[in-house]
Length: 175
Image 1 (tube, rainbow, N blue to C red):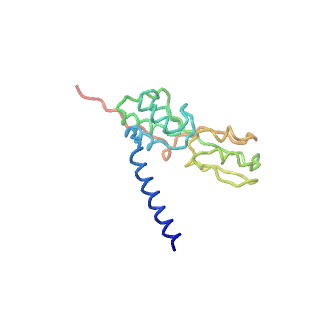
Image 2 (tube, rainbow, N blue to C red; image 1 turned 135 degrees about the horizontal axis):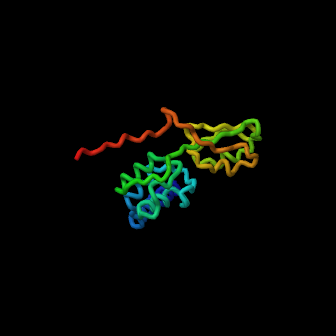
Image 3 (cartoon, helix red, strand yellow; image 1 turned 60 degrees about the horizontal axis):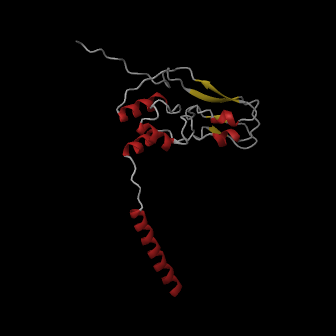
């Protein structure tokens, strides 16, 4: 019985110490960075040139990275980030969507592609054929780099009414 009381008191003291330390050592973060990070896909793919989505959000907030620098996010993310930061959005090229395709006849089921996919867009098991869930795939191209059989390619998606981001018509102001 004494050992139970000892561990309860010890647990309470350690819990209080951790609670106090959490308040004392709390790190304040920029709320704009938090908002940008919550908009991002969260795959940590590194296509923007940063190590992860948090670092990319910090660079966007500092103005070192353009809102259009996240390929998996597409134009919807670029528009939202530019609006949040209050900057003009200059799209240099047309927003192109990409999706991975697996040539199933060549797939040996090694499993490297679905382990490399940060968005869990590839399903399959070891030594079995894998397939891509095209609605989830962002076209980050990490899986094609990991495939040793070269049976995985990333192809451009043809525009379609159900998947394409249609920009709003521009309004001309009457003078």
